[in-house]
Image 1 (cartoon, one colour):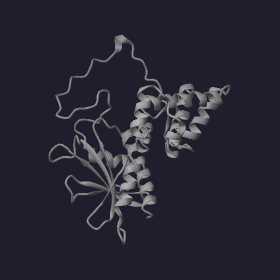
Image 2 (cartoon, rainbow, N blue to C red; image 1 turned 60 degrees about the horizontal axis):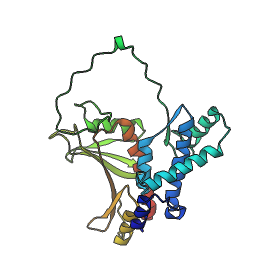
Image 3 (cartoon, rainbow, N blue to C red; image 1 turned 30 degrees about the vertical axis):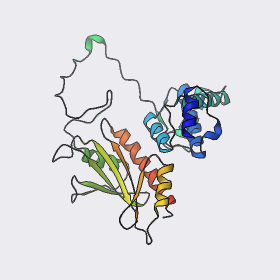
Image 4 (tube, one colour; image 1 turned 180 degrees about the vertical axis):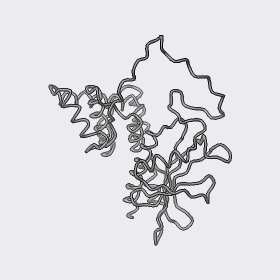
Length: 277
């Protein structure tokens, strides 16, 4: 089936609606509606990183030409349905549905940052000195933390700013952060850091384990891994289930960290339901 879908995409055929699961339909519709608000409301903008994570989580390939075409059709439909409404009404509706506390999908839209004040050419500051070469590659154009900052401290600060408890466990190397998400004890680790430090870390891992009286069967684990793109499940030696998410920290800023935390909450909530916790 996946091969057939790929062939259809290559030859420009739009995928029929039945090619998507119910959850994928929800992702496409919500994304299209948010994009419609973004296109007509100057005070709102699509949270692209959040949209990308949501799409990956439900195995929606936004880079597939057929999927992109489908999204654009739904954007046009959403705009048609709201034709005649003022920008003010549209902005308030977008904020209500998809804003930071949105009723439908929180954080899919974010309030646009005020335009940066333009500095007259004669007053432009001199470009900063070029930093010394780093052994770690950084995605071009990505906002990065200070080179000497501790990624562990940065993650702790982000968690605490979001209202989470963040206790440091120094028994592991590098140290881990212990917290609760959806009521479940979890560990957050920064990995592949500069030797002996928690600086310039390459990876971030969220992990939670569940102690079940009778353990869990591999069939349930395989079903989760087949259906979910974001969140890897596995069994330990006692057949207790675990789930984790491992992502790159290269170029990840604090806003993206917050998005990852929110998606870890979603993963934990879905996994609890999957294993009947």
